[in-house]
Length: 256
Length: 159
Image (cartoon, rainbow over all chains, first blue to last red; front, side, top):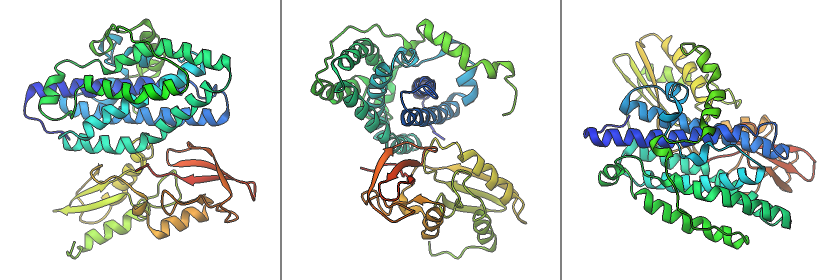
């Protein structure tokens, strides 16, 4: 359990953990929607496994947040309205085609790796340890996303075009993964985050851009309208939650 | 640790040997998931190191540990806590554990760098089919010699 004296730091860390958990839950839910529908059986298994892992990680971050601010993982995941979620809009978007899902998986997991690296190098011991463990586990996601991106981008001119179109749609919202939570400065100053989200975003760009360009793809610099971290979402989130929470809402007190 | 385990501590470790991972045919002790057991005035604190933090079997094992350890005479209370301070590595699995997995038809890595050996025919003429499998801790390979699909135990990556 995290022990933090300063109430301002506690509050901003609880908010940050919720944002991370919400990202993980949404991306995990979207990946899980490929179960039974992926292009081949291997991808079906892979996306199901990655989904299970992301949702499991969401649970761990919700539990950390609950330790600071009260509540429970289930109540966080199923009991909130869309405006209370802090995930980046990028993670709530529907899967679209396989190309978009792979582009998103590639961009998301690389972003998550930089976020976890910052926490792993931070001074909140149990959280830093957890982040170190997660980074080791997620190396398989990183390899998988890049492998598929290379596969698609090199497959045919049509595939290349579709990946580029997916990237054009994904990129502006992917940058939103690094929208800071309220009072992020407190987390950086206290040493919980080793580097702020702006620095993480710079590192992420320097990390993904060479891969993208090497594949003959391009990213355009765009102005991003943030929102997810302050609860401003697309209609897609409401639709997702309606389905994802329907069983839980039928009996919130049930023991599973 | 230089300290002699008490009778109760020994009994707890023996009891833990009976707790199996529901996703693998070996005990939590052979898997190397139990980091430590602390007993103070009947209060037992067990520290568990999961292979994968998101493994859905964690809660099942936790429950099983609690139920079994609680029945031991002299135990008033049992808590099972997860720790990531020293993450799980292949070295934590016992030789007996590796042997059991092999008998079960799984390929078990000696180290992360070594070749994947077919558990059925011993060939190393194997290729990866899928880095993901039916559980978080498995990958799927194929043996080009005996033509069998292989489940490979997969540890988190340190490279």
